[in-house]
Length: 73
Image (cartoon, rainbow, N blue to C red; front, top):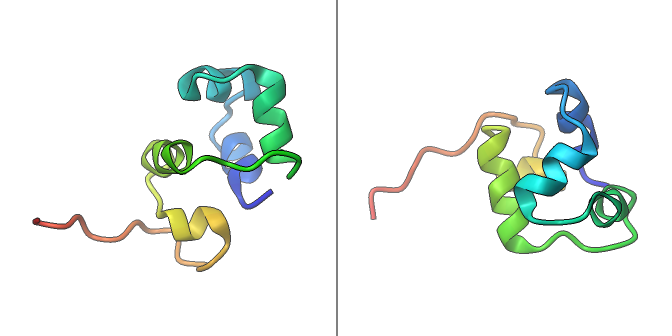
């Protein structure tokens, strides 16, 4: 689902490692990658920070991998 599997594999991370980072069980994270369960917004943000990309990229809304500039608000 989305690009999270490709990014995880490109970064040599296991599903268990990412699941632990998100506070999930490995099987729950696997279900997210396979499109069975939805990705929560807070998990989406954590993954974007981990992979240094935008949430739009993770969701497939853009092909621009580079993250947006940080807001000064």
